[in-house]
Length: 539
Image 1 (tube, rainbow, N blue to C red):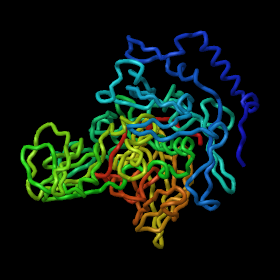
Image 2: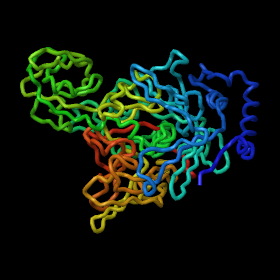
Image 3: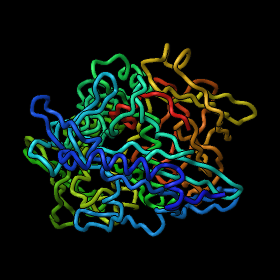
Image 4: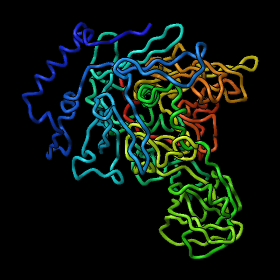
């Protein structure tokens, strides 16, 4: 049964009293009404107070039908969320956004980071000061600490979010530092890591693993490495956390009114091309393809050019002429040929027999989108060829992303794999990568027949982690993304999203659980976070 939250409930819960007390405290402090930059520290020092003045204490929710009740991919907005609209934006048009003044949906882009103790800090704010630079400084979406509640009845799952603590609600995953202090806000990486330093910068190329160091942006993202890179650092950064995935999925479901986020935004999961060049040229900054081939290539995307001796993205020859070059324009040459013009530092020689291959999009590909949610083009939101951004974070650039603090252990019997999930709130507290102190085993298990993708019917939230609960749905029902179980017993890394070659099975919620913890590849990337160093989540 759904809980109703109204004005009277605010009073009974004491939430309204807390809000009035907070407002009274801050009203006498004019500096709280606007962000204050401390030149001595090089940081803003009152952002928690600034955010607090926006709080409304209301509850924003949605209810999603359980698959057994109804297999639809939609959800129903409830409570204060009812009637609110979030439309996708493009590079050419800003969509309607009824959430832009609400604290629970705030996500301004900032420069900053995390201190060693897990406290986030901000050095610049986009549109507010002249220091903000997404290309040279790590860039984040600043989001408030939220409070959540979820429940189920025989037909629906209910999700509730609010900006002020109230009875029955818990602070969101990642809300507390490892030491137990409530974070003043949470920073979420706008971009994927490009170089293994856990950066988040526009204009870079997402790092992934290739055969040799001769290939640029070679970073072996995998659970083993991302877990190791997240531990015992001089700063408070970690790699992608299960807490980041909670925010992505919950906020998309609540703000878009969907059960399956993939039904609203697909990402780059069906953009897999490998073509021989049509013409050999020297001293150029382009590649010539047939008209049909060039029509498939999207302006703004990235391609590699190789000598033709190898067409697998993993191997260096596939990038020997150009690696992840940005497509800037296309021009018809007649005779069934089109020039695909590239952003290159210097001219290249393209020999006969050379091949091009599509690559993951570059970080910042959605910077031109005129809103906090959308894709460069209207068609690009759902055609499987473009990344998208949501709450100012870019997602689905054409690679899996790997979690540093969540994995599963598979057992297999009679052709069915059963995965037991484990999470670590603070990776520094773990005595090992997959055993010992620091790890918590979840009650939720995921089971499915091996050797194939299994479409997810329902997801479940447990201790802040999102776990596929029921599988064997379809690509157009339930969660609409798929899960791949392990064919053999063992520990498996948690890969999410899906690469550009995945097709209909991939998108938000897609999870591959068939790879060892050390598996890296051209199709696996990573992301910065600070939430792999947190106190345990109550929910």
